Image (cartoon, rainbow, N blue to C red; front, side):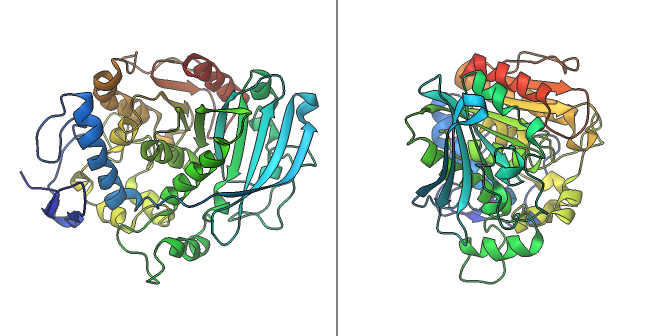
Length: 401
């Protein structure tokens, strides 16, 4: 067997082989096989050996290094006592992480429930676009995108429904951490490789930086008495769904994960299988969004079988916490069937560590929620977030939170 390392061990100071020297692996790798070829046979081996191995593999070959935690300094800039028709307390909080600008975190907590479970949501638009409420300030510039009108996406977020069902909701714009464009990302990512002007092969990519930012938001949310620190779910849609999965895989404090239409680099497989060939390919996503991933990831564009893992192992890193993959029938680009196959491939890990996994052999009919520990939902429609999605997500959270 060809080792993934030229020397030393996988955990610790690793000397990773360049992608061209990695052995080819046809089909999806076995998540319960250690780097030395031995099998994972217990929870202890999974958490003590395999989890550190997989995290280092994802860092080196796909997302880049996970940054070290940094102190969180929070300043409440807006406070509204009777938001959402008197249902909630609304706060806009500036989170200083030592970056070029603070991160704006919108926190809405129900007034009728103490110690509430919470959805932490990653969003690639400004907080002001999510509510008509004038208490949410409009930023001077939108990080990475044109600034949408106030409340332009309010109908997509179901905040009043979420609060009415007893959940808090917190949202931040991932562009406040790293802008989602080539020039802005290049400049901001230098925060994590300050000694060189060019990003190295496994230096932090944008998705990993966003995941790191989500964990810093979690640091703050866990200090609020209105929120139960052990019942904070993470949710992201599309590119933010990818980052939400990465965040949960690298931070076990997130109690539940909802990845909405996350596609390639998220919950969809990097390897294209014959039964779901229509999704976005690794080469396509690296070509269009090269700043999202580690530089090393681009090396697999034409040699995908050398990739020493696949996305089911990212899902498996979340075990035993519940993971819900949410899809849409007309969003073939995000590969709904491929995402379902990744749940199947992650199922053995979940069975080992929790005795529960995916309770379905086939994809469900449109509109039907599979609410098992590894969950799945697909609805009619296209690439977007709708009230129907939130209804399913809240039902899922009701079961597991």
